[in-house]
Length: 302
Image (cartoon, rainbow, N blue to C red; front, side, top):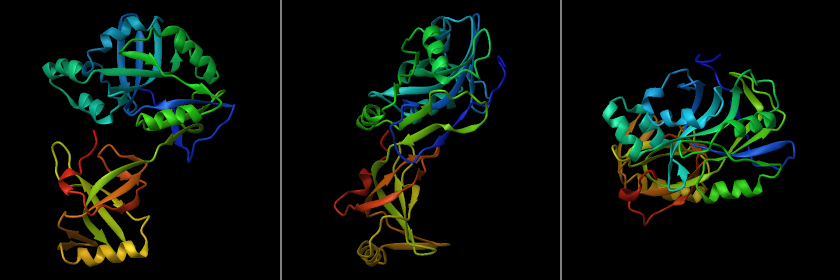
């Protein structure tokens, strides 16, 4: 098990937050799933797909002394904190760097923190122990620093944590059954991620009428402009569609398969739950047109 690629336990998607005395609730950190393997002075970091990324994070050298157990396998989320919240793009940036000089510079500009939420192994395997027992072990063996820390959690009631996650623009919360065992490589209903819906102002790049009405929306990024980020099919009223189509006919550029592309002059606000690694927004809902908004100001909020 030690220093071998492991498939972590997978969180299922929950529909909405709930209160239950049989569960604990943790913040949902937005980064990469990382398994840390330590023995003596050796430490290796594995991604959820089994890739070794230790060399990409020089700050892991500090983590060795912060894990008090001689031997340990910890389940963590690797994150970069900016303005009090984890920023997925920042940690992905760290993971893409291959030049050693740039890696050292990134430790200063994009410092990584490894937020530990479970322990799989120390002097023996802990997979079959109840979650709260593993939490106690985790807190005993980690000396919290800026580079590694056990995640906070509350028991029973999620209300305060859910409100905090929304106020701090966090991704959401994770509900975990207190007596849950750790089953490698398995998606489980004992762990549920409940993501916060967010809103963002986007430019309209095109539209579809078949098989149903939908908008193709886009955003500007630091290195890419006018990037399509989602298809919005829900939330439209009859008047919304009629008003949009009247304008769209006048600024249509071309038709490509089922999509009518238009000049990027119009904006709209959408609600979404999460996004893919390639910035495609998921579970999108139309919230309204923004006729006074300049499409040049529709940037991804880093």
